[in-house]
Image (cartoon, rainbow, N blue to C red; front, top):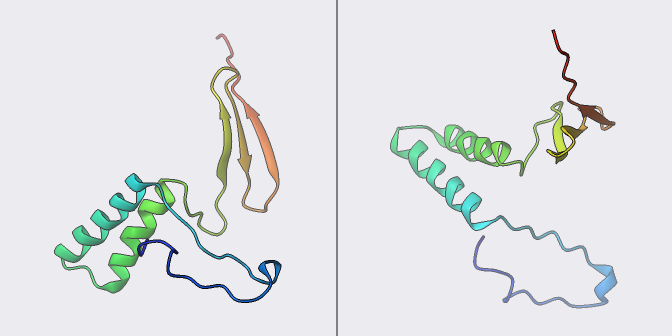
Length: 100
C-alpha cells in the first residue's frame, strides 16, 4: 500500500522472522481510497472515515467482523455454499427446492 517492500532490509536467519505484509487487489484499494475521500468530503470525523474504509473491506470479504459468519466457498453448479460460522466451525449448505 505504501509502495512495496523493496526498501526493507532483513537481517539474520530467514526463518527467524515473520512476514506481516499484506496486499489488496487494485480495485479494492481504489474503493477504500474513494470511501475515505468521500467520508472526509462529507464531514465525517476520523472514526467515520475509518468505518467507511472498513465497510468496503468487509463488503469485499477482506475483513470479517467478530461474531459474523462468512462464505468460504460457493459451488453454483450444485447450489452449495461452505460457511465459516461465527464460532469457527464449518457448515455446508445446499439449496433445497420444494415443489408446492
